Length: 465
Image (cartoon, rainbow, N blue to C red; front, side):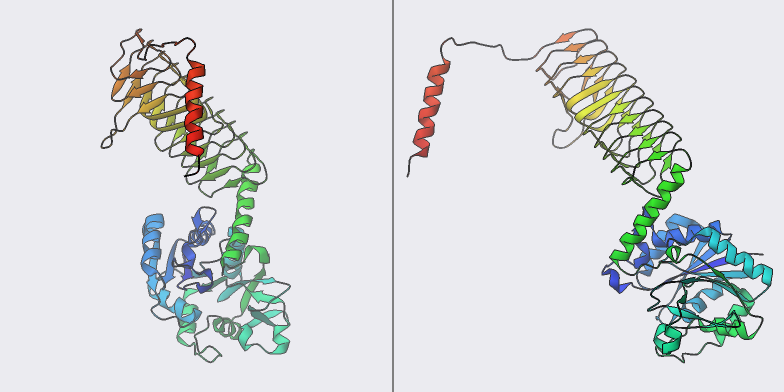
């Protein structure tokens, strides 16, 4: 049996107060609509149709990039109710069964969706749905039962006082036989307070026929997002869910760390408080990310140690390397095995080969630093002339003294030594010593005269005008 997921994502989400479509707002690094699609596919859907309306071009473009041909688009030109939205998708459905889901419920669990799908197939009923119980059902559709069986759903605005007292609600997760759904949708009428075509009326039609199957689920997994406060609550739950999943795989993750959906983490890695891992970051086995590190699309190899407050983007860190504290790896930085990048060092488009070190207060941009080379504190790669970037090459075993400026393009040969405070403007041959600094001149007894002159100038400047 084939199954298509229909995801309703046409609403503007006015309470989000955003120019972006609601379903594109991210939860743990992944747009809400992506979460529900991943869940549908994990539960057995073969393909999906997403119904769009507000911001259709942005939603459609994103879905093409994220899912390709596996997800098709249906347009709901007018917002005429959930029944109308599903009807807009049906011309694109060829499968035997249909899942109907909302694009703003990212916490839906695949196991629950799989369970209700199997329940419908086993009972051979035209429809099955999830229900849940909540303390405050205000605003939700209520589940109506007779002799224990679901016979209908009444929306809150259309419900009587007695029906509003029902605490079992409809979270909007359905599985239907495709042929039945087509017939039922054609028979919907706008006989309600909103004058819309309600998808919930299809439940009553199924109940009048072969009946409706239902399964109870945890309300916490079925929460819809309507505003930014709910978005934050859902995201906190998702971050907890992701962290717990990695903990069960053998990763130590302290409370307060945030790991996005696409991140991969190896066994025995340790993620400390306040760490944020984004994008397609990958953390190797046994690596340690200390307090406050922020990584975006970074590959960290086994046993590397990122000290507190390291910030890195689109870069790599090799095995047994050390980075930080307070280091900044800008895009295309590659820190090789056993290399060290220390406090207040910034790198950009630079590669440090095995065992190379830059431990203090340096800017290394557009560079190649050879094995076991050492870059002293305060060193700057002068890589930009105002128009173009130029490369600095430091070959294996070279030593760059503190407070040196290397004016690119330039090469420091293997084993060369650049003396402290040198401005290097010419290539340095292998094993050479480069010195370029002004000769020191000590003027004996001159300091008191200089201080007196400076003090007099200050007093004159402080006099009222």
